[in-house]
Amino acid sequence: MRLTNYTDYSLRVLIYIGAKDREELSNIKEIADVYGISKNHLMKVIHQLGKNGYIETIRGRNGGFRLARPASKIVIGEVVRNMEEDFYLVECLHEDSHCIISPACKLRHILHQALQAYLHVLDQYTLADLIINKNDLKEMLKLP
Image (cartoon, rainbow, N blue to C red):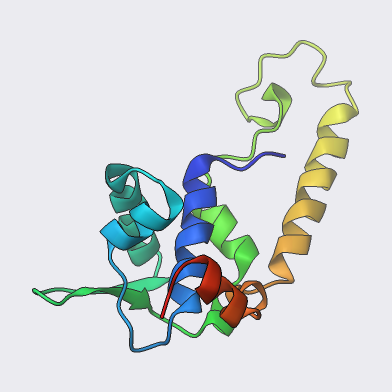
């Protein structure tokens, strides 16, 4: 299983924001600069993270965004499910599959099981687990 860059960037944004103190706001430019990611791409990621309730946006001249809920309440499996477009590892997992052996093939069931196991592992972790080493992250992200 391979996650899209979109989901990877989403997780990185959450880690960045989570590594900061709760009252500190983040902005797209600083995250784009730290990770070397396009600001335009990050705008889409930030918008979706906000839409899904992971971050809140504060408007205005000194605005920015921060976590909308505690890091311990942001489940990684949920984030991945919300940010990925689909989980079709192979064509036969898609409901519109045209594979001629799908009715008799056992691979579909095995891959579905593997995907469920993958997501089950991600469901066992929260953002708090990813930022438990805040001091190290702050240093690497050049945060105060």
